Length: 214
Image (cartoon, rainbow, N blue to C red; front, side):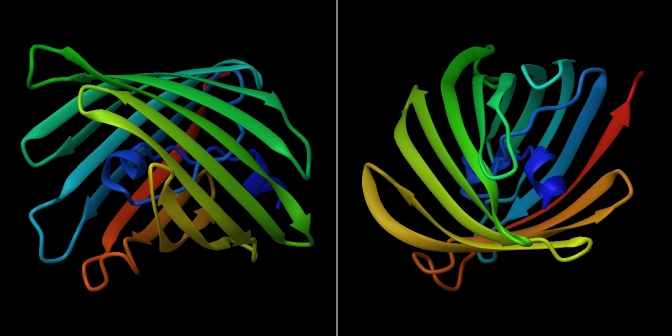
């Protein structure tokens, strides 16, 4: 469970495409480079997208910086991220992230600002929790999303189940997923829109890695 608490799952495509992959409170250690690549799709819809990010640990726990590229049909945006982990313990961790995104198809015009609050920790044994609150404001954006998950750490497998909703229009939806750890890599499979849009779930497949530059 300690690994779950400290690892940073970076998947901003979760925000853009409602795949609802959770973020944890931890940041990247100083000198470490974190990378994540994913694709997402919705069977029966022309909604395939991609997401790629690189993040670098500047100050242990206190500061990680990064950039990302997200795409979907007719849309592409680059984001710049600041992330901090002001409090960390076994049972309760706090992470904060803010990202400015710019539309690559509109002369690099600013598109939106998203800010996330991440709470996670151990409940008992291998059982843990993860709570994410996202506020997004900008051109065509003004919403607050909530993702609540229970997770279980079983060797290299990390299954999760939870409920997601928008505070401005509360319609709870079921989301499930897992990631598998091997070496300095993690492979992800995630599904959202399982109850509100039954039969057309949003599927995300991804892989991440960590490079120590010290």
